[in-house]
Image 1 (cartoon, rainbow, N blue to C red):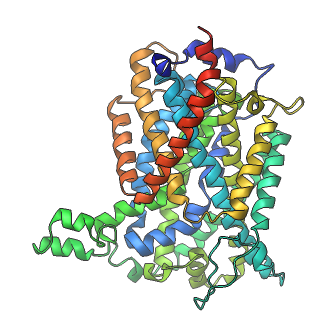
Image 2: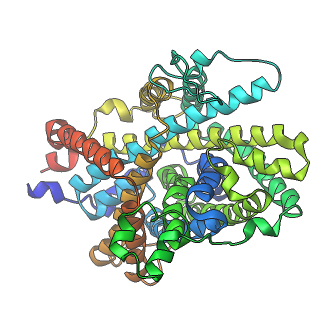
Length: 501
């Protein structure tokens, strides 16, 4: 059992990164890494979850929810940046855990990342297809409902009438296949497409903020933090804290609503860690990786805060209840309705870049696990010309497209969030461990105030996990149990680290 906790040496990790002839191509600049991070972050969260969190949880104070969620991500981001500058190898949190907490924990986190990347891409693909359908409808092209929903989807029209379930979500399947083929073509080509998509969606976000700012109605921001009736009852001595914590009042406005809102909008930040999966493809990882991770997180946080402030200023937050497209609703207040098509294009571009980076991140994690022998060699075979893990891309093209096309994934957002928060927590712990076990290792970036900042990162991540539904914990437990079966049946026996003895 001691082999379960055996760590991979830093020297062996660096040696694998330096083998450029057999490994992944180093084609990504610092600017491309920042764009990669922005591409992964700005998407479904900004364009849909902002309105949901405002209506159900925080009101205009959803701005504070974004700041709180960003704070947790910032602590984790700093830890990711230190690891990425020290261990410029593909694999992200999986690789970092292997170097600090041993093979068993590395497997757990690698398996856990499937939740973040694969299921995250499937969830976004399903939403992407709905926006594409709306965009085509504006040109008089109507796609059959049966080809926009899977057989287990519950389809309810505007009047609350349920209709016959669909056959499959065809657009979602097609976009996953196209993006997977693009990734097989090459990282440089994928980065170029991603850069174009990032420029497009950031431009429209800036236009929304600039044009919408002049139409903000101060009345919509009053009160900025809506009163939580449960907190009022607590102040009056009619309800205790524990009773309040278990009641429906908790998380519905007030400061508890801001906390719950932070857990909801946290999904909007998922993706910045995907930058670290491309460490082995960065031209200068020691310098570029910290810039890519921290730079993209800072830029997106500023945009999120400004965007949510304008959104709740244009339209009263209560009107976002059940609104699938709150951005369009809010922007209608400006009178610039001719830009609605541009907003839809930006949303589609945002979703596309998120899927692209998530699919890329997942393939790199499985590539690293295969190189270590924890998965079959199939997953680490590189294409002869593009040097991309094309077989892994094909495998996930099939896996993710099946989820996106046939399985209702609307309720998997929480599952993706809990998997990501778990990964963030382990990375924060890993920095503390690595400072003790490898204090003299060369670090292109160092997290300040260790262990205080990493510990704060763990606390915030665990607090956000605690705010997620019980079902999320149950699904995480089931998924990890399945992973344990795979590890003890296959991975432990084929591990290169254990077989070297």
